[in-house]
Image (cartoon, rainbow, N blue to C red; front, top):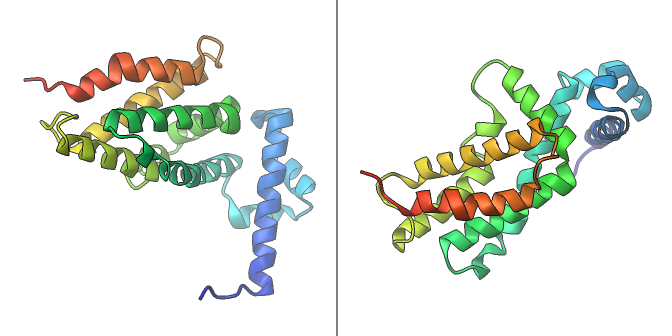
Length: 206
């Protein structure tokens, strides 16, 4: 049975949620660079010190939100059983992923995430974390595809999943760099999969 939260825990969650809500609304209306921590705490109705109880910086709020994207991936993954092949599963998941980032996350938040991850020292980054559900799901799909002979077997599914995800991150990066003006993210991802990624997953190179 889940332990009931006390009043202090509930207040802490409410404060954190208020900070996140205020920050995301301000980022959307004023732009990330124009928003200060004072702006966020004033809009949230909390003390400035409360911000640093939960976050080290403004960009950490964006990074934190991207961890929650995996909740959407988990929800969508439950429907992948309707697709009979590994390629069909990857294609459907990629379509859903790209649509979610384009329509829900948005290009401005994605830019902030990429900028933060590039600037932050160290190699332990959520974008490349192999423990993310995104990575483990793709690995699972590819491993199943190897068992059926649909996916190449000359390297581990984990390695192929890393390459697949790295390729998709490149597409996200190009979308950010061009501010979404040169191509539609979903349509480009569909072409990317069919014309470039899937042929590489099928063929073994000597």
